[in-house]
Length: 179
Image 1 (cartoon, rainbow, N blue to C red):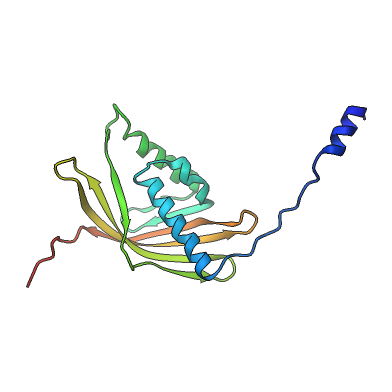
Image 2 (cartoon, rainbow, N blue to C red):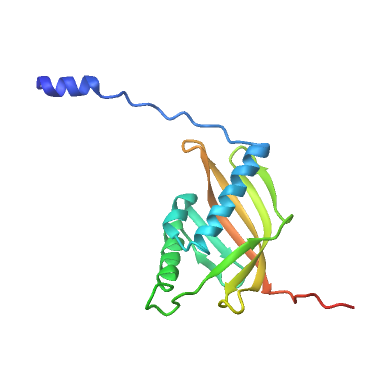
């Protein structure tokens, strides 16, 4: 071995074994899941930035949707579909200027621990589309969802493992009918 190689080898930092981090519980777990939920839906809807969301998905992610079945059997497929969707909103593309958003229904979310490995999030949300300055945002529907978040001890974070999206329906009448 050359002298230079020996010096460089001696100066190299020793490999540090990752210390698995314990899964947070209680308020810390809830806060992390709530933050993930906000970032996830912001990234897929308003920001339309699949690259921002990709690291949040477990490689084995899958989504089950009550209206279409299994639209994504992996994180890679799901992110690929999102890229196509977002690209179609760019100038000169078929959905140029399309904007949509998702809003969590306040008070509908529950988050529970799944053993020592994850968490189950369940909530309701509504969907909205931008209809221009004169009309603004219009609620177009709503649904319920269940997310299974797997704790990744070596990464110190939760990743979305599975999404079950169900009970999709039209937007409720607003204002509600009076009796």
